[in-house]
Image 1 (cartoon, helix red, strand yellow):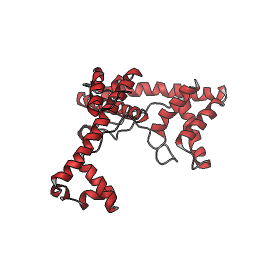
Image 2: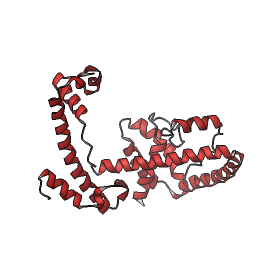
Image 3: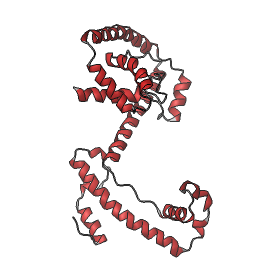
Image 4: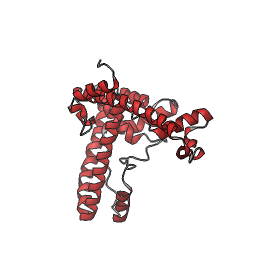
Length: 255
């Protein structure tokens, strides 16, 4: 039960606790990842504002408690704020929780009527626009979830290409920030002798071979842990002998 409550807290925090920690000005789902074409379509369709869902008992309590906690603990992390609110919620009396529940029930009845009227007022084009936006948001959430898992499971990173290796080396040698190197050494790569370019390419190929081995092993591990969605569609993980052949080329024994 406690674990589920904390999971709910994290979900709510992503949508309610804004960068400005002193208020709750934005209760709508995040739309930052919508494609520009979809945003333009929604603006052109002039879709009316959708009725807001009523706040659940816990979110009502969270909304009341958060400003005071932030004021008393300005340096407290968002995750700690949510843990404290969850702890406080467990100590709220049943009588007080019932008041929150009654408010939620009353507002839910009004919301159900409002959302029916809202949906009935939309044109078919507006409905399609909202459906497209919902699909994009769903896909974006899926991508962000996979990206998070990849980071947590230490997915091997692709090696830098020859040109990037050149920039990194020059950045270090000249003591110039890497993000300034593109303009600083513009054109120098093209003038570089073939032998020098070959050195960077050989370095890249060596790192690429290590990357291939690490990625194959990581993908096999992910499949074993029940995350086949993280594996490339045409992944060589379906052909384990590929690991042996890569290691053989590298003259490295399989461990």
